[in-house]
Image (cartoon, rainbow, N blue to C red; front, top):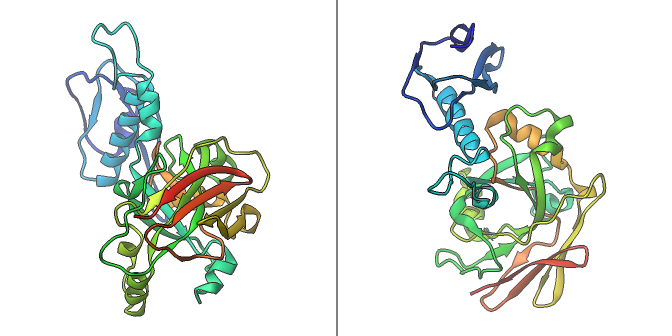
Length: 296
């Protein structure tokens, strides 16, 4: 066992049977705002297993074990073990654990819906089942009669992100695209009027189509737009965001771990509106079309 590791972890540690991934990854310290977990890697002969009663520590270790198994290829080898498939690299980016989205990140959009402009980012989540890729169709759900489109810039996380400072946040996402945050506006309005959470109005199956991934440009605004049946309905630029990409990653990672493959919807500009069956929505970065979605 590495010297001092047991004391740093603050709990009992025991040796277990060797695992494919021989790393232990957790250092714990107490800070005024509660228990903070930060990562460290110690290669050992046998895997060290944490035996403690802190769910956060257990979750953090399991997350990093999974990531390390993907990174070193142990999650996907040929039978002979002589060659590592590249498929695990693809699965890293295709595997979406969660979608984190931001509301009211453009002042004009907040105003058009009669909402206050928040001081901190407004966050909500969509499950992986909300994702639509490959220009697949959007199937109009049967529990609503007022679905709205909201075009957004979407970031793809490439590293495990927890307690990330603003200055290094850009190292943790590797590509971006355009996406549509479909919203059941009638359901959302009823829930908001009752003071209830409105996640079901945003997180239903198929509510998050995303386009083709491209590299993130360095230090320049990104212009994007959405057309409905050939007519431009929304136009925006990231220069108008209240909270920029790096501020969002920093803020999110204070509260929960972002994992490789997670997606971040960064907010929509003004101009949102309803869709009907038969509509064709197309989303662009500049003049480059990255997403096409038919409403069925």
